[in-house]
Length: 176
Image (cartoon, rainbow, N blue to C red; front, side):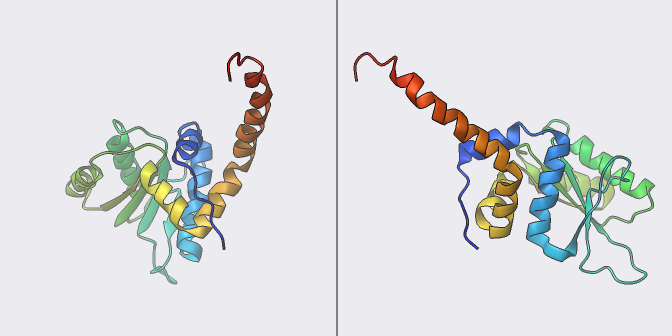
């Protein structure tokens, strides 16, 4: 399967302008592409804090322990969002041992944030921010295809708008 490297500026434009619902839909596609059949998407409203869970060690009579949460929450409120997710998972009767949190934002000091949450809840937190998502999309052929398919209408709209600019810009040039 061939890949098309996503330009940094195009990636930033597409991801920074996506709504929460669309980001969740995109993240489900990308993580589904990366984890395959071991990833089960969930979600919607009142989902008990889980946008998906990881299946590899789940068998008859056992519960999943790794959950995914997807959000467009900024870095200032990320800890609050992840803590709320953990609390919602527990309240819903789930037994999280790991939460994989993905956001459309860049999160500096992810390691410190994950450590703070582990110290508070005893639950491992893995953070996949905008930069990591871009790495997935530009290194995994299936994630790349999922991203391109998801944003195809947006990418086509940008391409079409640039075509109409060529003639209009040239007529104003006085000195080539």
